[in-house]
Image (cartoon, rainbow, N blue to C red; front, side, top):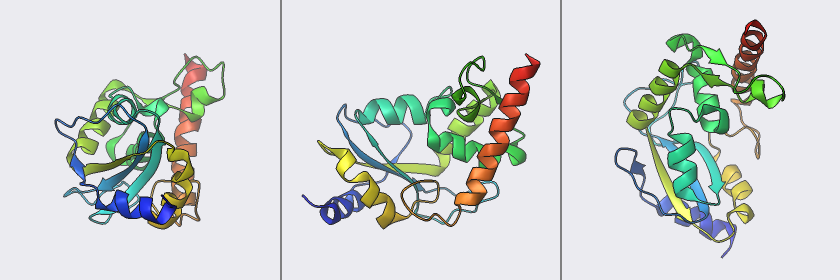
Length: 184
């Protein structure tokens, strides 16, 4: 199977609503899509049926349900960190380091307070859908899929026209996490 076939197959997969969703415990690729009524992404406006993020997983069920859609998943989800950073000011999200600051990632892989995490999860459930494609070697295709679909929130793999905006918002969150970590 070549990359063009994989892209075609992923695009042909149903976009699943996030309420009551069950995904298989297999490796594969996934694409998150904006499917909501809200046009917001904070400072970044989303189009209907817009691909937001493409990734791979060794276990689709664990990655999608336990990380991306968990009320405690922001520190381990690029998708959540980017969305939260874009909504931070509008929703008045409070940023915290994910750990005690011993590692640099404790700040760059920040989290939000409990209310903010829940609000982000709720927004995702109401406004996003996901399509998946089980594959044995998803790493072979991820880069091509990112280049082909140009997802708004992927920061590597193509020249994202929104990359500077997203990076600045995430940098602001990381700085707030660092400052809050010093206070504690």
